[in-house]
Image (cartoon, rainbow, N blue to C red; front, side):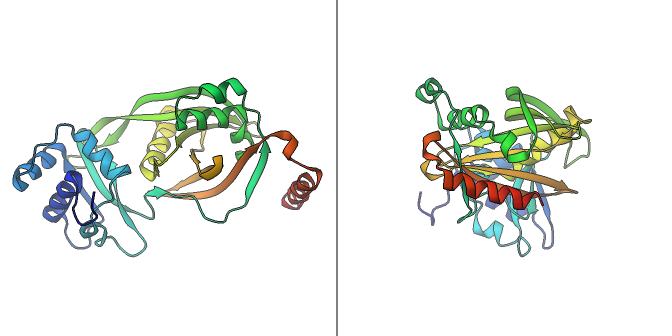
Length: 279
């Protein structure tokens, strides 16, 4: 796709935004019917799957510049669930979760069983397996983490952005862990994972906070995202929610290597860093 030729999803959201946006507005809500009406107005084929249109705008195709240029400085637009068949464009500090460049890579002994490496079916599944077998969540968060459920599909209740009524929205979390800290407090850790060229979005983290709040209200919410980088390096992100804002509070990069590759000098460096951090 040429950058000068918007795809169908971009054409539709551009049309809807032009009709509904008013200067200074920080939220723009629209419905599935609005997407269909926009296609009819533009004289393009009616979308066969509205869900694919929204998914594309969240994770594949960037929102048109005519939309993004209306966001306040330092913010971007992202498409949040807005109720049953309703979506809301909202301004946020960031949309896509992108690993930082130049962050120190921590090398850990690889504990992934060889048979798991051999038969992993996809990058995402391989990533989740490595996180689990190497207890990377324990290392990253400092919690004792126990897998509770994989590929959790559930619903959350949100307020309809148009009529204010409560409505249900289907969400999915790649993995779900329970964590215990040194004080005995219980944490809930929804995990989102992406491999290859796929990207993570703040929308997924927002949904995980909603799952934690509504399904596990007595536990401390600690959403985590995992991303494969080059050379098999794994980036892990931890998040915090304050009001309506989600921020990245910590990011670490790990490289799983054969244990024999970790020499005494490297281990001594890690030991020194740990002693300084604990002071």
